Amino acid sequence: MSSTTEADAESVLRLVTPSLDLKRHKGQAGKIAVIGGCREYTGAPYFAAISALKIGADLSHVFCTKDAAPVIKSYSPELIVHPVLEESYTVSHFSEEEKRQVQERVVGEVDKWMERFDCLVIGPGLGRDPFLLECVSKIMLLAKKFSVPFVVDGDGLFLVTNSIDLVNSYPLAVLTPNVNEYKRLVQRVLNCEVDEENAEDQLRSLASQIGGVTILRKGKSDLISNGEIVKSVSIYGSPRRCGGQGDILSGSVAVFLSWSQQLISGHESLSENPAILGCIAASGLLRKATSLAFTKHKRSTLTSDIIECLGESLEDICPAS
Image (cartoon, rainbow, N blue to C red; front, side):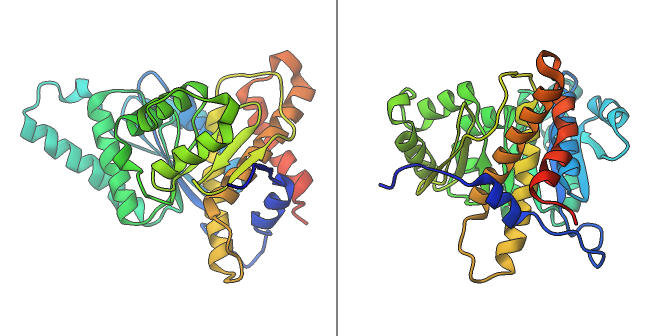
């Protein structure tokens, strides 16, 4: 097995970030959709969706519950918000047949848009409501039917850990677990505990066991594997660990994955894995943005401060002109 190599994140960012061109029309730089947002959690889907726009995606959608929609809409007029997801309390008095019809309606609402999306982000602010998770599992099957890539984070990883078949052997799936989410994945799939002594080999084995999905294991150094290679991203970073950075990362991976796919489809000579490239680029940019935000704000750094540094950080590596 090959050893882990430190990825040249800045070179990857320069490779996959498209140049700005007056000939391009709205939508060609990426159309991203976030599946998440419920009564309790409205910040996470906003962070993921707005980060995609700040990096350079043209359109960013959020599919959330009816309760979450007005709140998320109030954060920014830039987002296209769809209040279509349902939680158990809204259907508690329904018969099983009526619940099935509600699920069909929810999936049907997403189905209207699915072919337009370049990538989905599944999980930010999703919560763990059983009925909602069941609806989202059907949305994931729909995405696979249309070969739409998706990034799974937050409570989406809770869903996937309990239903591995949702992502098994789907090469366009990216999982972005934190320490605890990774521990649960390892226990579920490899039936053992996390082995820090052999972290790279264990990550490679985990990705391979799930059929070659790409896993971005977040940590002091981000480790990325698709079951064959392992790359690390260690540049930059910040000692301030405010909540929400993972949401920025998931939205960022979605954009860079879609850009990588565009690039590779237009250049037959390129054989790189677009999911690996997308993870490297997103990890490198987020680390640079967190470093810049910490320089400016120190202990008071918030997720919104990091988001405001995304554009400046990308411009520093990939000047627009």
